[in-house]
Image 1 (tube, rainbow, N blue to C red):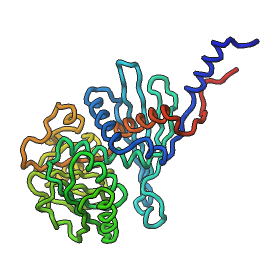
Image 2 (cartoon, rainbow, N blue to C red; image 1 turned 90 degrees about the vertical axis):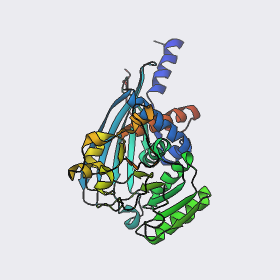
Image 3 (cartoon, one colour; image 1 turned 135 degrees about the vertical axis):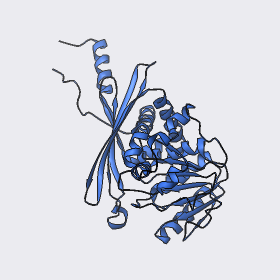
Image 4 (cartoon, rainbow, N blue to C red; image 1 turned 60 degrees about the vertical axis):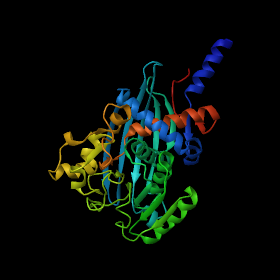
Length: 351
């Protein structure tokens, strides 16, 4: 029995729609420039504020030398009847770069159709994680940071480079101070970023150098005890605390949060694993003292900066809303340009 042309074309469409795109780190980097990622992440937070997200979830497991975590979230487009869902599995081993020459973070993102469950894409997570983390800082800075342009970066690993690139998209940088416990790493960071961004950048041996002039602080470390405190941060400054993503990590003095304005990327998560967690555990503040989540600020539901001299801390633990917003844009662009390797994981069996 022969199939009709209509049946054949329908079958071809089903087959094409059942394919899963495999996208490498190089694919992601090509398809997701930092400015596009910033806009995608901001739209993701806006949609989260409108109730168009599928509840973000987090599961973490610690092992010797590192750990694994799973982050999940989805975004709905009710008007179009579409939804996408992402599950990211990341390994985080801080000693990898120095001991093995491997990235600290390695993993994969599975992107699903949120209506029928098709596996749309499998993406290397390194580039997405790095870009979306920096993009969240840029979104927060766009709404909360002053315009002075003097930045101190604490921790000069790979993520800090993404942070500074993203920040340069939303603020004009005048001067960058780079601090790291490894002086050579700070020097290399300052040299490279000065050349790349065309900004004055110098390595400092004490992060107190230039503290009184610093408008924007970025902490991007694996520290387990706070190192940035009230004595460092001048009135009116903005602090993006990026490094604390499990309960054992801590970058900020608890009193710095308790006595100033705090905005969380996801309050429930920050209260469990971020720097907010330590301030709450110390009995210095409660969740009700947090001004709001970044989604609330982006949407206008919660005010951002109310006074020039306010110190505002952004506690960034990384939410899967960012992952699904970035990954879905990569997927759309891959489909439009023919990027990625299509494979067939499963789907309906043909008899």
